[in-house]
Image 1 (cartoon, protein in one colour):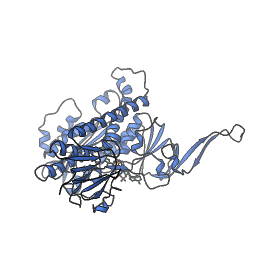
Image 2 (image 1 turned 180 degrees about the vertical axis):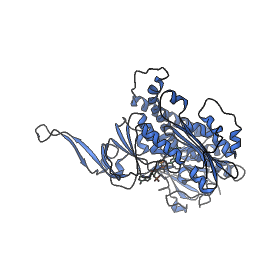
Image 3 (image 1 turned 90 degrees about the vertical axis):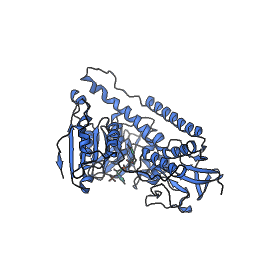
Length: 481
Ligand code: NDP
């Protein structure tokens, strides 16, 4: 049977673009790709890249104070949001252009529109034209969700935050995961008064407890009002009004009203909020960072027999193959490990399996990752708590004031931590909380992925004077369990 294409990719984010380019360029496959919004997906357009630029922008705010002990005097502390915002969007435009060019140079046919699956080998574009393909790859990503509560639709989500025309004076961030903590720190650095509600005992659930505690205490010390065991109990719009000039009953003021009607979406605030812990406050904006859902609806997946999980994720095997043999899926739509480099790895393994020799399963073991809080959290492998559930461990942990901030009279601390198996002596996990931890953990990740033991770390000579030298100089276990 002949097909219009060898591969039809739905979704032009990190995973989809990598698979399309690689199949076309390296394997000579005839490839098409449909993207309904912008090329680059969540990472480039409304995620990692603009977020990291906002992190950089926010970090400059610390320099005037920190640099005083080093003899510098900065006269001005002002941040021009409109300049930054303009430059941010220019950079996103540039990167989107790079993605488009990469696809064009690889010879991929791009369709700037939505696509749906009609049968196991047929894709229909929004304007009705149908194409057949030997393989279909779904790489449609995910989207931020709002909690199920009255008026939640009027709060912001991460997609909206990059389009603020001006920074709010105050914001309530709901959630305690990656997005909530990263934006709490960066918006605080940009001068926004940040309050964070997290429904559990401590933010960043799933990470090492010592790291969570250190980051939380640093966020509090930096002025972020982190409220734990707190969620929104009530949220309503505060309308500022002026009385007509002939009405002398009062000078004007504010009224609270329950939000109603879609006309308010996106243009709302300030909000009066009551927390489940009794906390009450008024915030210019409310930002929900309560997780993401796979973009799997209205693609025709169920109709052609592609199995979905409880959260709408496409169920795939270790080769990213769905329950329909000709249809594959990679990235956040499969809700495995929702990170850009993982989507790229999944796409690469898919192309190697289908268009190159041999079956290449995706390796989801020992993935290093970072949370861009301030300070950053880098981790690879197991936390102390997870490791202790599995076997007997020795913990090597040190927390100290780094030289740079100590000299400047600042109180912030860093954490360097290794979790080691007492039977195999392998390093099971490494957690670093420090400025630059994201850069450091990449290299620790190589050693741990190679199966390094504690003695391999010990025989590595320290780089001095650095924070990370502690990772190879911790001789005595802090505790064993
Ligand atoms: P996460 O799943 O990491 O965090 C969601 C947070 O919201 C959790 O704290 C969760 O609480 C809380 N929550 C969930 N539902 C509710 C609710 N109904 N009411 C109140 N709180 C709620 O999601 P994110 O959106 O932060 O990030 C999504 C994914 O994107 C991450 O898991 C990560 O894979 C990826 N990402 C990676 C980044 C990076 O690599 N630096 C940066 C940003 C995102 P609880 O803990 O109790 O479940």
